[in-house]
Length: 147
Length: 77
Image (cartoon, rainbow over all chains, first blue to last red; front, side):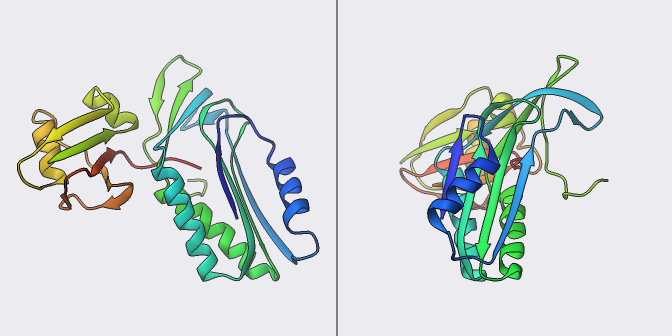
């Protein structure tokens, strides 16, 4: 299991390939992956940048607890979770969640569970810089579907 | 009793600072501590509370050396 926060831009596909090659070669039958990427629009406005604030200590603790819950609930071989912090720009990857298991159901379900729990519980906050020059806090996460 | 209080994100901006220290003669709940520290600011709806980096209720009694945090709904991912 690996959970990390990074203030540097990262390539989720490279991180995934490297982690998989080092830890898991030959062991898994299923990989489920979620990558969240920064958009250049939100709520009808152009967005040029964003700052991701977090609560050092509690954020790591919450993520560890979510990953532990997933491990108890599903038969997983491994989990990789990377979340960006600090200043980001559109097209930057914000979050990577990958779950490996022997069979697809465990990997699919655990990946979804971890993402939804992270959205609800992990203390991160987004502050957007709009194309208009305005700066605003994102007030809440959506339910994950186009409204 | 010494309590460390922390605010995050939009709440930090509304309160005007990130941290506060509070000395108390007896344990108070999280909401009582908010009122004591911010008598002129009603707690905004939806504020989340953590004690020692675990989610807690507004009525949780905060003890000596605890770290109490107030923050708005989370928006990660």
